[in-house]
Image 1 (tube, rainbow, N blue to C red):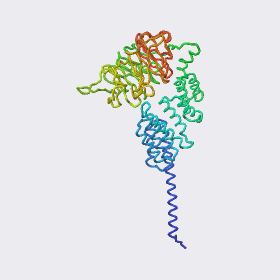
Image 2: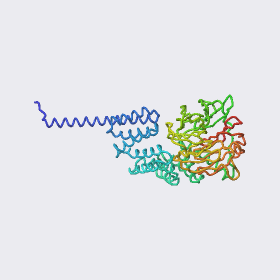
Image 3: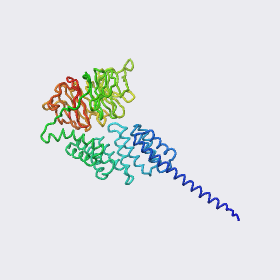
Image 4: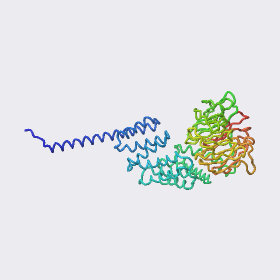
Amino acid sequence: MTRSISRGAASGLALALALTEGAAAQTQSSDLARQHLESGVQFYAQQKYKQALNDFSIIVSSMPDTDYADDALLRMGQYYLEVEENFPKARENFDAVLQKYATTDSAPGAYYYIGLTHLRSTRGREGIDDALANFQRVSLYAKNAWISAALYGTGKALERGMRWQEAVDAYSRVTAEYPSSPWSGSAQLAYGTCMVRLGDPMRGMVDLQQVRNRFPQSPEAGDALGLLTLLYRLYAIPKLGGAVEFKLDPTFTLNLTQKLKDVQGVAVTPTSLYVLDGGRKQLLNFDWSGKLVGSTAAVDPRGVTVDARGTIVVANEKGVLLGTTPQGFTVPDEKGPKPLEAIRAVVRDRLGDLYLYDADQKRVLRFDRGGKLLGPFPNATPREVVKLELDANGDLFILDKKDRTIGIYRPDGQALGSITLRGQGYDFKKPVDMALDPAGFLYVLDQESAQVAVYDPAFKLVARLLPSSLGAGVLKKPAAIDVNESGDLFIYDDELKSVVKLH
């Protein structure tokens, strides 16, 4: 006997089957999204960013209702912020997280990254309040994983505003309340450097040693060792009754078949030493064994620096070399745009603005990344500039030949301080170069006396290094200087026709 199924029962069965199939499809979609996220994270860690971005994009566009879409969107924003430094695109993704997934665990992460975007996309002290506000919003989400990151970001924003004690308070909360967080080592390191800024370098050394004790295998431990080395040399040795001195490193020798000639500058990176050789009209690249590993043509070389992103910037007479890309600059003239043809010094900030000194114009001129003239900096006062330097905050140091002074200016042109290169018992007659180390100490080289003066981050004289304190008198006619992360000095001497390393 065959039984018929009623219409109501059939409808119920169809609904049940549909729900089952829908649940299965949803589960399958969720599993696929998870797999794409895991794949993207792995690619990102391997720096295969194109593949990582593809995985994240698939989730966001095709599986937006899964539990992994908010994570993928957040990671896309992270990519645009950290890799491309495309700030508008990064902000677009972070805002989308807050609009679409405001109650997920990615929302506090979006606020953190928005704060970081403000810090990285603005100069000097601009954007500090916006950054602090977004870091504070992270704590609106109770017990989330981003609080320690936001506290660390708060410290960085306060440092930008030169609010050192408040920055220390933020860093101490990270180390005390979140000792196992990924930000604890960085916070301990920053705490130590802030203590130096507050005028307590010995306490700073204690905190830097804590970084090495607590996080011995971390990158921060290496940074701490470098800072400890330079602070020990400048502060601990004098306290122990010794004199500050730099010894010649006999293991460092440039392997060249012919001597250097007419060197216009030296620049140090974590992996290389660059020497701008005017005689060869080349920028020479040496590794740390002294082996020549490459060179770049420089038509009329006048100076070399390294920008915040690690790009080599060379001043030529009639233009600037950004890495391997040449760029020319013009200024308004009654007959039309006039090319600059006497460029003597150049630096580039993190966002691409360039500060140029042109001997014909007798002014420091500021150009945007596209080459548009923004005006004289910090004002139109005529100057005779020897060297330009930028610190981590984007503050500009101008070494003036005529006055033998160094003026320090914020990105908005406001005077931050000044250094007079003379004092009790010394008077620099021919300052030819200067360099900043990672802790903010300034090293000024005087050619006539073969001396180096060292100033702390508050622009106070810490040490005056006589020739006998610099490689036991090895320097004869020093012409260019740079310093690495450990405070080791690399000085080109025009009589020796070579670069010496003093450590």
